Length: 123
Image (tube, rainbow, N blue to C red; front, side):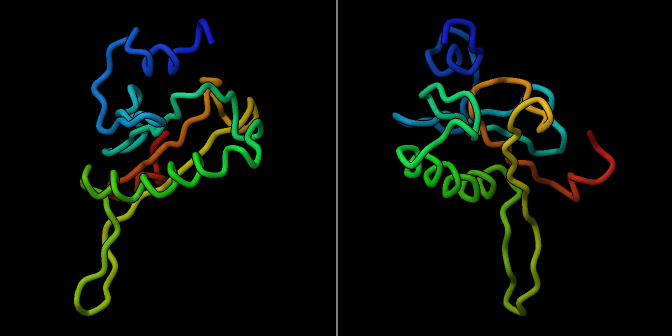
């Protein structure tokens, strides 16, 4: 898409500092973070919303979902259990879809949000 900021980032027309990139996906920090750790996982293929996905996108969505915990751990908000089984860390994943879903950029992307209780008292 000609005016899509995420397409331009994926095409290297707009600079970014990726935390991950392969043939299908790019991940980078959100420019307006809602928590101490907030990054986006974005397909390079332009798909406007999650509602536009079909069976042909299942592998891509699975890849995004499986990448989230790996990158969350690398960025410092991975989920873990200690030897006694006590949980710590963690993150939230989010797809905003459409205007009522809070979507601002109409290019499919997953937010990964982490840090101490990032969903409380922030944006």
